[in-house]
Length: 185
Ligand SMILES: [Mg+2]
Image (cartoon, rainbow, N blue to C red; front, side, top):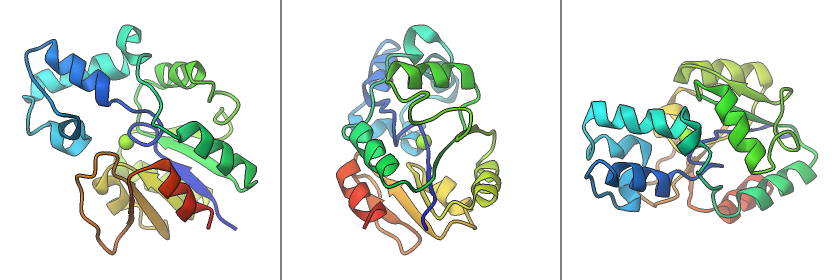
C-alpha cells in the first residue's frame, strides 16, 4: 500500500506568474526559472523578498490569485481514485489563507480538508508529520525539504522549470503527467 504526501506551493499551486508580477512591481525582472524558491534569493534582496512572500502567502489581494500547476487537478483526481490515502503537508504559516486558496480551486474540502491537510512550521516538522502518517511517497519542489524526510522511502522533486539535476536521493519530475506515471505505476 502506498501513502502519498504532497507539498502545496510549487507542487499544487503555481506561483510563477504572481512572483514575476510582484517582483516587477518593485523593479526586478525575473524569468520563470528564477522564481524557484531556492533560487529567487539570488535575484531579489532579502527584505524585498520578504515583502513579496508576505503578499503571496498572507495578503488576500494577492494570495488568492495563484493558479494551479497544469495537470494538478486531474492528477489529484487520479490519486483520489486510486483509493490510497493522501495528505497535504505544507509549511504555510497562514493556514486560513491557504485553505481559502484551496477552496477557490475547488480542492477544499473535496480533496483536502481538516482530516488530511497539515500545516507545520519548520522543514523537520514535515518529517515528523510524514513519519506519523506513514507517508511512503512524498512530493516537494524543494531539495532541502526532501533531504530531511528520512522516513519517506520514495521522494519526488517537482522541478517545474527544469532547473535541478538528477540525484540518487530523489526522482525528479517536471509535470504532473510524469509524476502520476511514477506515483501510480
Ligand atoms: Mg513548496
